[in-house]
Structure formats: C-alpha cells, structure tokens
Length: 223
Length: 252
Image 1 (cartoon, each protein chain N blue to C red):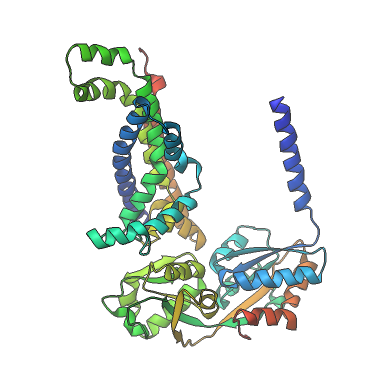
Image 2 (cartoon, rainbow over the protein chains, first blue to last red):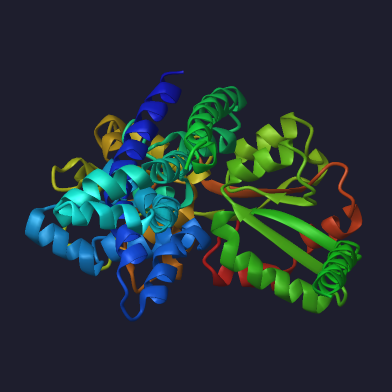
C-alpha cells in the first residue's frame, strides 16, 4: 500500500503547485480579459480556453515536442538553466497546469466582470491608488468566484492523466501520480491495488468538490 | 425545429452503430503492440482474400490485452508476445488450448537514438554515469519489459540500471522515446527497431535463454469461432508468413 500513499502525496504536491501557478496566471489573464479592450481579445480568450476542449493527449504531445530534448523550448531551458522537464515531477506540474488552466481562468474572468464598477469608481474618488483598488476592492469582491474555479482546477490537476503520462512518464515515487498508478495497476491485473487507489482518489475529489460547492457564487446571500 | 433535427441525427447515428455491430464475419483480434504494422498488413491481405470478412485489430501490451479479455472484452483471437501471458490466459480457461501454437519469433535488441554521442555497445555500458535514462517497458504488464529485466538480472545489472529506467506502457512507447532522443537507450524487439531505422540505431542483439516466441489462440466462447479459426490458420499460410517475414519476424 506504500505505492498508494506515495502516489497520493505526489498527486497532491503536483496539484498544489499547478494550482498555485494557475492562481497567479488565472487571476492575471482573467483580469486582463475582463477589463482591457484590445484587438484579438476574443481570439486570445479562445486560445486560453483551448486546453479545456482539446484531448489531453494532444496537449501532452505538444508539450513533449516543445519541452523535449529536441524541442525548441527544451533545448533553450537545458542550455541556459540546465533544466530538463521531461520525466520529472516538475514536468507533471506543467502538464497539470496547462490542462487545468481554463477552469481557473474562465471563472476568474466572469468574477471580475461581475464586480460593480461603481464601487471601484467610489474608491478612485476617495483617492486610492489603482493597485490599492485592485487588492482592496476588486479582488475581494471577485474572490469567491475565483476560489470556486481554483478548487475545480485543483481537482482537475489532481486527476490529470493523459498529458502527464506523456510528459512525465510513470516512474514510481517520482512521477507516478494517483491516476497513473491506477492505470498501471489495472493494466497489470492488480485489482486490489487499483481498488485502494480509486477509493482514495474518489474520497479526495469528493472533499474538494464539497468545498468548492460551499464557495460557489450562488451561495452568496446578499449582493 | 432544432430538437427535431437533433433527434433525426441521433437516431441516424444509433442506426449506423447498430448496423455496423451486426456486420457478419467480423473478427476482433487482440495482438501484442509489436505486431502492429505486420498485422495491419496481414489483415488487409486476409480481407482481400475473403471478401466480406472484416478484421478489427486491437493493439496493446500483451498483459493489458489479457486483462481486457479477463474482464470480458468481446475478443475472438489473442496473439501474445510471450508464453507467460498466454499461459495465464490458458490457466484461466480463456483460450482454446487445442488451437494454441507459436506463429512467429523475434529478437530483443538494445537501441540508442541515431545521433547518440554516448558510447553504448554492451549492457555494462548502461551502468555508466552519463547514461541517465533507459526506456524499459513495465515488466508487470509488458513482455518486452520482462525479457529486458531478465537479461539485465542475468548479468547483475538490474540494480544499477533500474533507477535509470523510464517505465513505458508498451514496446512502441519505448521505441518512440528513443526515436525522439528523450532517453539514452531502450529495449525493444528487432522488428520495432527496423520500423524507424533512420531514427534509432541497434547497438546490441541480446542473447536470451528462452527465445522470444509469439503464441496465438482463439478465445473460448468466441461469437465468431469459425471466422477466428480461419484467420489463425491464414497466418500459417505462405502468403501471411511472407508478410510477417517482411517486417523481420522469424519462424518460431
């Protein structure tokens, strides 16, 4: 059962990192697309949403080709920083981040768009800096919507399989996440291990979904 | 209006599926991943020879195919890349033992990317410090992984190579990682290496105590038993053997 707990710990680590990255990226792009008007905004929105509709295997292939030893970005990272992402847990983080990104970005954009502009205007009149307005007015008002997306992104990252397997492989203790461990156990006919793994995965996902449900915008009583 | 269109579309799609699944003379063949190219070719010539017949091919690691059959997948013919997997199928009463026979043989080779700068010529070389990643299929479900593990254990190298192992789902994934240069070396079959000659280099053919032989058998309770038998015996014909030999498969 050691494998199950190692895989759970790794999955949580990968999902936590991916979620932290998506929190920053999702808020940044969500705010940008909610507020800024520029040509190609719809196209950018579509591109950023793409990972949600594209098969994870396609994303995994893109990442493998891009970050691999012969990929443009892979060669650059290797030469300048000595970083190699393929077959590492950091590679799994990248894969999970990309796959879960739209789930964080979309709600973040909607949450920012739902913020009442008059409240920001009032803060501006009172002499608060733009930075101050963002952190003290806009972000707190949009926070619940953002958080619900972040939790969904976390569960998605936790369950990521296709892209992760292609980019990070399946090295026990190093890159073998819960979902990959389930796949390996089923393929090898180890039903006991598979049962244990799917129960753990289901339990973790239910807990996170319950938490996300409590934070959903619909639960806010007074607006 | 939209709903009606949708309903029409859905019922048409359903009818199409129903019609295709009712197709007579369809044989579902689960074959080891290493047989991919050769079986596609052989199935085509089989279909040409028996008009109206249809061969559906399902490729994966032999261990994976076995698990699918164990769980009740509607398969008619099973071709495994090792005896162990077929033994397991026979022991569980899944295949017709009387039909079982070996139909091809293969070799285990060590390959490196074509532009590799590392000096890898023997198994010992894998223990070198500058060799960091070696693609080895997962021994739990993939025959080539077991052959590789056995070969390395025999010369007491498993413990030093295993930490460098990039575990793959089937032999073709190992082949792909080597061809892309993502790993320094990999274990595949001779027939796999021959498919991407321009991208990988065979540095060693590994001698094995038990040679690689592929058993084939029909599945017990197959819905198309007669068709299944016909396909299995077709693989014995000179024509089919010539196709298999073209891809580098040896006589068992």
